[in-house]
Length: 184
Image (cartoon, rainbow, N blue to C red; front, side, top):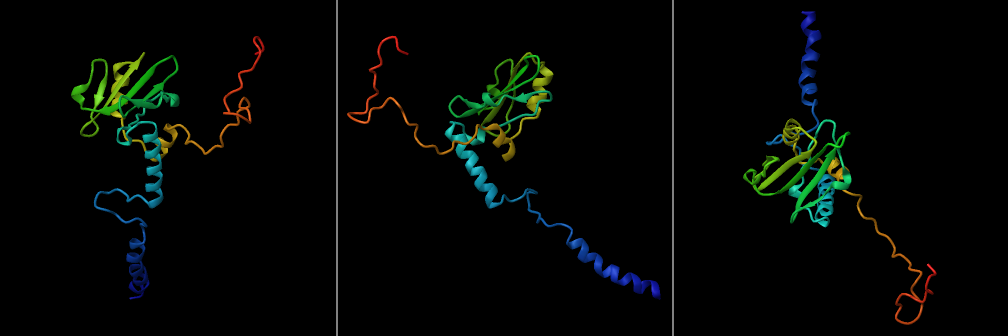
């Protein structure tokens, strides 16, 4: 009779321990509801994309083993699409173009995926095999906020106007072109 009495407190404590295991609530879709800060951050990133002429819903990235994003290649494609290039040692380049359309709009020499209705991502390359292009196409995904932050150029900062040294302090403030010939 002594053994069941010892086990009783553990049995009573077990449901409380199991109930406290998780701190997140499950939702129907299995995804987390974004926090207000995350929503604000995403709105800021979307605004930066729009300022570059890129529709946020057309931004896709890929993971290609051995290739690195060429950050300076990130830009607009067409009216409001997205483009980026990934490079590897030896001069190999993988190009990613995302735009409105469908997989039927895929030109020769590209591997295309249609990640959402009305969107197509074209993957092409230079000095790369078809296998690498297929792997890159299979890895196409929407960027996480961290990936998007690394992808975009730095956010503009507020600056004071540049003080020009060639503007006179009188008159219509046109530039002073009174520099003698050959002095420059």
